[in-house]
Length: 451
Ligand code: PLP
Image 1: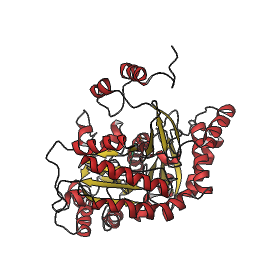
Image 2 (image 1 turned 180 degrees about the horizontal axis):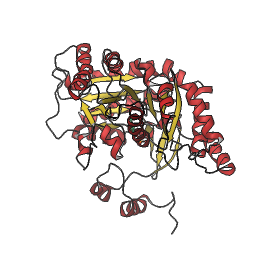
Image 3 (image 1 turned 90 degrees about the vertical axis):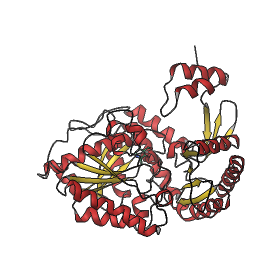
């Protein structure tokens, strides 16, 4: 039978629970309560199957940078599907959308990040990075330099390789992870872990954990360090100012490739095109996905500097996905980048919306439940605490209060996400000042109800 938007929500939910296995969802919750069925979206607003509207302060999963409902992207996809719906980029073939997107990315990215290896997602791109780093060092005559250092509480994807790079212990616990030669160091999360230390001193200390790890593991064994310029899924953790310059110094000193995972931070999220620019990082490799197509089509990639590309081009890199450089997804990404650029959306988000959001969002720190409220560009977080002065955690199971707050957000027509007892936002870059005001009013109400 035909399943459509017009069916009653309860029927859709029952069918969903019967046949659909969801990512990061407990099956019992689905069976008990059913999933929220989203049917349409426009701008920053989502509509569900009962006609309820929500301000989507998460841009989907940190990806709909352009906002919903831009038909130009649908038209770009349709045009490309009619002309050339698929061809691969293996075995010495190519096509115009892949050429054009690689060329555009080389222009947009800073420094000499001029070379793109395509994937369909951030996870695939980070898997590519693991193989790419190891191939690079093999080709350079240092096959033993295969350890990649990463951080606890990082998120780099959910395939076996990318989840191993990630530092989510609960994901590793589900078996076989981390894969060998991935080493995790502590994160620069001052609010939760810095105690009485000055934030900048703490930032230095956490960066120097990289140097300690290199010396312990052996300088000749470490090939790369990977980090999100600002940890997103870990709770929007903005590192102290001292952190990234020290990481950069250490990578330079020990001849280690620096990978910036820009899957969330890229394409305007931090107020500039890339988080590396906001944080002053000069990576050898960037991981991109999400905002590259504003989520309208699955695209990701690893963008590498000229020196790394030169070494890789000396061999056959035995790696690739059927959909590496898929023509339709490339066409959609190109159209997205055109609009972000030509309509000045990244500039406007960085220079006008971000300062406005910062003022409003940081005022939430006055709420009795909020320990810190931070924002950079258009990504922000608040920490919920029973005691601001001591930055205490709730005695209940971690995340219970955050979950409660998220539910109060839903009830107040707002989608925020909780990461444990941190609430996070990452709205579409096209959010207006009026919509920011609505976001703050609804978030405040949800906080009052949670308190
Ligand atoms: N890297 C970062 C920083 C992410 O936030 C994510 C997803 O949230 C990924 C990688 C994985 O991307 P994907 O879900 O497209 O595989």
